[in-house]
Length: 241
Image (cartoon, one colour):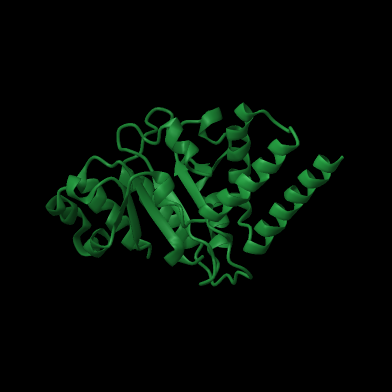
């Protein structure tokens, strides 16, 4: 596990103190990169620092974005945390230890890919639409009688599992970012459309499917190019016939 490639993303947090507590949870586990969907000026700097204590440097270097998609563009994998299941919530949800094992393979050494863990708003969590911006889902098992976790506690649990899985794993290649995967997905979709594989209405679902599959596979640049060549050639042959 290369912890320098782990990015904690808070989506629309409401309470400034929770951000401070998150900074401390991250620092406990050697994770330094914090990104927030929102604006820095919307939060009370003093209240953040009260709970961050000696981890305020994480808040100082935090990056701010307009959406989850923007915040994860340079990541190979984006995992949304949720306690609710459903068709629009990634179906199969990984437990923290399963996710940590996957992140360990992807981040590897200095050439590995970035991995994002996304946490939703304190009151509502991640919406169905926001979960669709992620490439897989994680759930933290908890009591049916009181399933909702405090934001910083959820961050602490995920960060701890990542920290415990930390190892000197050598990665043989650099997995491509989600931006690059989207380009491959577009090439696949364009060529499938050329041969009449699906109607225009079916394209978005097909793209979500390919994006999730290729993200979890952590493909390399050469693999992305090879996939594009396969579908382009197949569409060309089908058109000739």
